[in-house]
Image 1: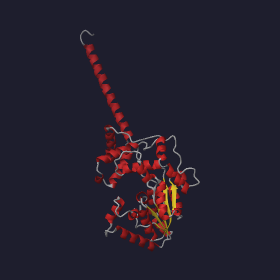
Image 2: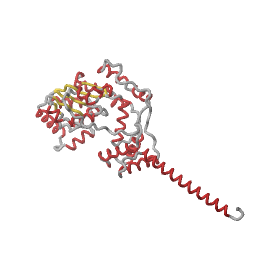
Image 3: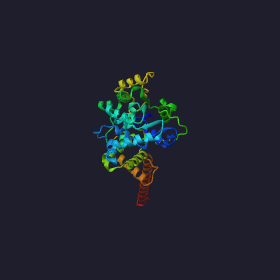
Length: 377
């Protein structure tokens, strides 16, 4: 069985890809392509969990260990995975989990995953989508806030740059285990995708030619404005993460989005270039190794790019946003902050007009009374 492994990166349409695979599981299987259930129904997180160091405190591993019925997650998962592959009769297997690229940081962990896959077939391709690091950084920060983080937006320190944004180092680790010929990085930019479409490009990368596949819903992650991100960050700091569940957080994020329209976080062209300079050597190494015909790995920064950073919110602004969210909760789903402020402005204008009308009437009455006094006739 030929195995095609998709390892991310995070923030490169992985949810769309995994929904597509899950929606077409039966059609793919009928075509001899297995998208197995044992690693996960959609996002196959058991792959990364299995490969992580046994002493790791990573939440992905701990969650699956806690859920294991017999207390031995690795043994039970390996048995189920091998049995499913062998019983399928398929010629090809497709796997997808972005945590493989973000959580498996040592050669030993990657080798542990390879040993699992070698038990059922031959890994033909490891596919990873690369996103220009400045966009990757901004998207990662927004997602971290949406999932409960409280840190302020800032450019990462060098250690984190090396761990998360050094693509040459990432690819070298996977190539050392699987062989460079198996590794296929692809660029996550519309103009670089086959057919200008992520799913079309993914099917090309994974050698999927099954006709009539459904798009799978293509759920889009909620995009927050810079103001919405800062409001949610403040709220996260005020409410302990263990007091919120995933569904409540998603509902809240949707309501914050509706209440705070506006541009998302963006760095200026100068700030982007400065950050990209810290990974320029790494990016050029990737270009030379995997894209030798390109003059550069990623498109240059647009010089017209403008900066939009999370603002400092006043108490009044926080209260206005909170009021809009509460109205949303009570059923007034359509009113945005801008609409709320417009309505409040109209109300204030009417109040001022009414006050002026009353003042004018009082002055007129006083004038008439003065005119009626003896001696003023």
